[in-house]
Image (cartoon, rainbow, N blue to C red):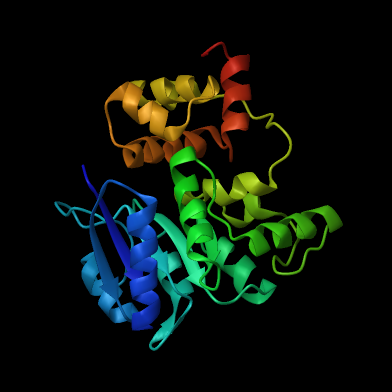
Length: 252
């Protein structure tokens, strides 16, 4: 299965720039579709109000979302795509808390600044293959400062990214940035499918997403989907947490 990408960006120059970034980042991109506003994006997704991919459609695997659009905010689409099977990355000019943390709460899997150099954006997007959240350097520093100082602004209750994402299947990548301790919840491995158990075993052994895809003979985006499901079922937010639970239960 080739990778389909949707870029939601109202500025034509920025759309072209992001399209080049995506092409350079991944070798298996089959198509890049562009949308200039929310209405066009919803139409391309196959329905008016987002949500799960319509039955029988070939969904996008990667969606880049601008926050400021002519007919609303990209955060609206992030909320609507809570159950859509895609990795959702914010691409914006805003690095302030008022945009960053609400975007993460809405389920963004990464946060990139369009002002970053082409090479930096390519490097960050490629982290998806390794199971890491794409974060612009300035955003990564902001998150580290936030959690080191215990600053709760932007969350309301200061509960951290793992809680802010409410366990959403696509929220695990950013949540792992905030996670530093292993979970104590019991491993409900009976709920994992055979494929998910196989992926979990490879994860625990330190293989990257791309390596797992090669070993299993599947696309890396498919591996990414399995990992999201594993994280959701085990109530964890990083491969380290999943590995600890799997080891305790003798699965690996």
